[in-house]
Length: 240
Length: 277
Image 1: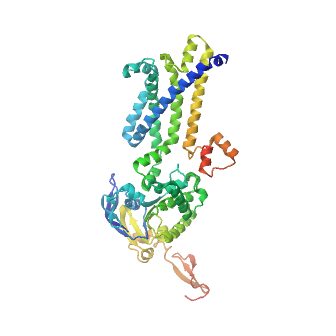
Image 2: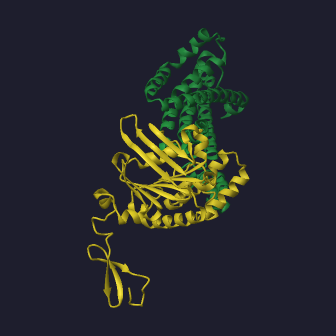
């Protein structure tokens, strides 16, 4: 603990760098995977090809990819961009399958109803399909988030600074405390990001069926209100 | 007025849903398509708002072929109510009802005001407005479905087995409610059901369909009961089982109505206590 306190500025700095190196690939992977997944859900024949393509991408080992990328795209060897691009590829690979499943799971009856009431296909896509795919997409992003945060640490092996650097340095110096601090910090980051994602889901999808959760229920009790009004439902983070 | 001219529909898989169908539906009346599954009744209904395109023939609304109209605009001008209500689970009741208004560019406040008004029209309390569809009972959801269909005040309301999934008591309630609404609003309603009692209750004009979209008989419920076209119709409406062939019998000064099997189903109302027929 003393070590962590004495080196808090370094640890915090690595924590922030690590968060940055994780969040960018998660966002990029998500933004790319959603339209591709949507397309795959619409074209059953292409679906197989796209999804196995995604799986193959994911089987590329991360370390060689970090090392090879500079040669392929011309970045510097120590450029954090290598890690960001490689992890975006992995995020995409995991996310595309979930996205395809998410869109496939949207009830055809609801889509039919939306079409019959006069949604154009673009409006239907953004205002009906995307939000209804939301809960499954969120579940996918949560997996991607954890996986990305852990993969970022591998970047330390090629000299890209992040919380993984505490592992390499601790290992080199045979200093277990540093490694442990690194592990705890990585886990904390993963938990923090996951909590943020869950919170985001509650705010964006108050209608989602998985209930208010412990915090939401507590809030309902404290605020002394039921779930009669949508604003309350949103505030409580779900519906009972 | 809605007009079907020699309409036929063969689906891509070769299923013949409708074969040469002609019909005129007068404005401000209720027409019910009734038949067992596979008779093409839903297909015919969905041709009106171009959810299904006929393979040949024309569907006209006020003498204009719907094929020439923009699909999305056409659908927004026609109310559509379906089985299981088809509400958007991620939008509140008020937002669901306001859907078409918002799509047509009505402002948020005006759309909300109108949706509360329509909810009231279909007999739903304002307290439901901010709930999500999943928080309502099946009957309430169906009312919201009707409200959504009516919100933009369309001339035509298409109803595809709207009361098929609710329990019998709620169904009775909704049917009565629909009759009341129709008396007040005078829409041109096209209604699809497999329940002949529902068809006779709601329809000014009833179209009985056989498999393959063949018309067995078109007429008012009274005409169909008085002069069933053939044995299919006779059996479909229940005339062969005797439930609809009623007899009168004098019993201690009252006229009792008996069905074909001799079971009493009621008394004649207009002679209560008078003892004369």
